[in-house]
Image 1 (spheres, each protein chain N blue to C red):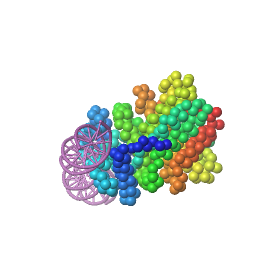
Image 2: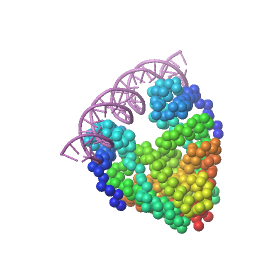
Image 3: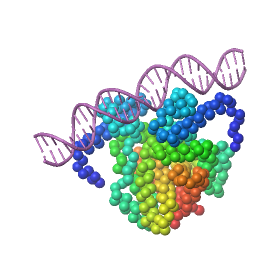
Image 4: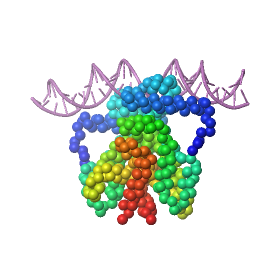
Length: 212
Length: 212
DNA sequence: TCAATCATTGCACAGGATGCAAACTTGCAT
DNA sequence: ATGCAAGTTTGCATCCTGTGCAATGATTGA
């Protein structure tokens, strides 16, 4: 858990600046809305020059959206890949995802503000989805390795393997999006991880009912 | 099929202008890339003023991306909703989607150019997916009606009904995205509709294999 | 033909975004 | 500690995006 190998001052300052900008943009955007908010306003609030803002984020939106979820550490990934054919695939993916979003959870206030802004400005949500593509590709590659492990026959056909891994990944992401929607729309204070388990369970029941 | 109730001259010109801009942006972007392309360039090529460009599209990207797929006409939708519990749900959704993208298919050259640009600029692809949200909501609402028809018991619980309809929709969209990816990445000249049938078939086989 | 309606255009302007070079801060080897 | 290399912040200049407004011109329907 402790990935803090004594960051240098420079690195710590960088992170602080980044977070200062993010906090500033969330605070101001929540108060008066995105459109009546200029880079200059944000920079003033964050105590940096407008030019510095662009050193950290390519646009106003990018600062609001927040960082894309990351894959968990290598140990978890390795465990998933080598879990063997006996372990349920979707369960494994779900846990990887939960780990991923859990590490990304920062401040409760910020999370709430971001959620509100996502509701208010659909294009932000959209861009966030766009940023997921990287995550998506990483995940697909991992799933591919797992499939190759579980089913050596399938591993012979690279095309089929890749196609299947991608489809499985996309279905898993469908569940993730489902969880996200309910979590973002709902008023309940249920955490995203819990909602994710619910959504994956519903996906499971869907698959069952689909088979006569 | 013939939804052309004698468009007036004004309407025809509007459509022509829109298409002229789209053609211009695709041509120029394919030649020299998106970033070295200004609104002024595009407008010159399309023989309209820069101001007019913005009357049609909110941004450069919007012009490249193309229009979001539409739901098919009401007859098809009605047929889907009332197909009854005997008809396979995913098959029905797939056919609705195929109809939707088929009407959106314009010119072969444009389609190809757009495909290339989507490969080259992932954020375009992403934005396109984002634009699907409207389509997504429309589809979810239709699926919800179908579910309510098929399963009156489920229809009692509005929450559960909506949640399930949304999940099913998202899974179907996962298949659509899968088809889209393969179609965009692949060199094959196979059409998107065919690829969609392949992807939905693979989804089907996935569900089967998931059930021991 | 005339008036209403809608589309196109030019103009002005605020804000977004980037390259560049100067000033400053941090890291590190001596 | 000192000094140099590397990285960060900033101001400045500049181009592009995007929008409101008002004038002009084309299309429509009576």
